[in-house]
Amino acid sequence: MFVRNTISAILFFLLSFQIFGTSARPSFSLAAKRSPSASSVAASLQYRTNAERMAAGLSPRAPTRVVGSGQLVPRNPNPSPISYSGTVKVKNASNNSNLGYIQKGLTGGGRFTISSLSSTAVVVSLSFVSSSSPLQLSINSNTPNWPYIGGAGATLQSNNNNRVSIVGTNSVPSGSTPQNVGNSSGSNGSESYIWKFNPNTNEITAEWVNPNGSTPAVYIYYSSSGANSGLHLSANSNLSGGYTRVRLYLS
Ligand SMILES: *[C@@H]1O[C@H](CO)[C@@H](O)[C@H](O)[C@H]1NC(C)=O
Ligand SMILES: *[C@@H]1O[C@H](CO)[C@@H](O)[C@H](O)[C@H]1NC(C)=O
Ligand SMILES: *[C@@H]1O[C@H](CO)[C@@H](O)[C@H](O)[C@H]1NC(C)=O
Ligand SMILES: *[C@@H]1O[C@H](CO)[C@@H](O)[C@H](O)[C@H]1NC(C)=O
Ligand SMILES: *[C@@H]1O[C@H](CO)[C@@H](O)[C@H](O)[C@H]1NC(C)=O
Ligand SMILES: *[C@@H]1O[C@H](CO)[C@@H](O)[C@H](O)[C@H]1NC(C)=O
Image (cartoon, rainbow, N blue to C red):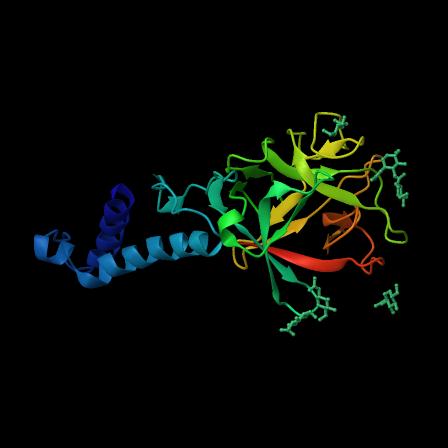
């Protein structure tokens, strides 16, 4: 309100000056102060800025201080995170059909897999800062007994069939290579900051830091049966061996 009133006052002052430019002293009557032109200009100035923030997925900003002659202080370059939570819908990437939801229970191999029932879907939450910042998917459901949905494995390459299993894991710092922190599957290290989120489409995409620090483009796959049943990551865009490429959406 401070900003709006201040801007209104400044605009009114300028407006008054324009209207009463030839008179000796500007008039500040109450009626003139409520001048629709001045207040609507002030309101639209403020609204435009917040609309931009909303479009960018940010909360409305706190009132901005006005310094000097109507010059605005730059907006905070470090916006606060926004929390999202829900279930994770899985779609077949080749024809966009729904395959179900990531389910709470793990496979015998310790991987997350798909259930057609939303009632057995795992509930996750994430803390969004920007579409380019890796984030963790926190497990809100009681089971399984791990705090995050992450990946366990080693080097992914576009030209072979190496995979990383989607598992339950303890936290590993963002940008780190696989670490031995405890996970639900296999003997390799794991990572937890392997997800990115697009709040416009609700799509959750994956990334992976190889043991040598490289970050290949990775794809999410599903195998419905056998020893490798469940969800995986691969850097191979056309993984062979009965894997279906899938897309994930927070729902
Ligand atoms: C995904 O769609 C493709 C193409 O329609 C199909 O061949 C494949 O079996 C589907 N995968 C699953 C798991 O339904
Ligand atoms: C996608 O593929 C699956 C498996 O082949 C099939 O059952 C489903 O009908 C297909 N959906 C669409 C929208 O084509
Ligand atoms: C686990 O790590 C070993 C050694 O780096 C590697 O040979 C093996 O392929 C890895 N397993 C998986 C599933 O990535
Ligand atoms: C990953 O989890 C499996 C099964 O709980 C465990 O045997 C293994 O030691 C874990 N690996 C690491 C590197 O923490
Ligand atoms: C890391 O490993 C990948 C896969 O083997 C390889 O393509 C890449 O060149 C390596 N990068 C570095 C910096 O060693
Ligand atoms: C994907 O791999 C299969 C065999 O593994 C092959 O028949 C197909 O042509 C490949 N598709 C693309 C787009 O490379």
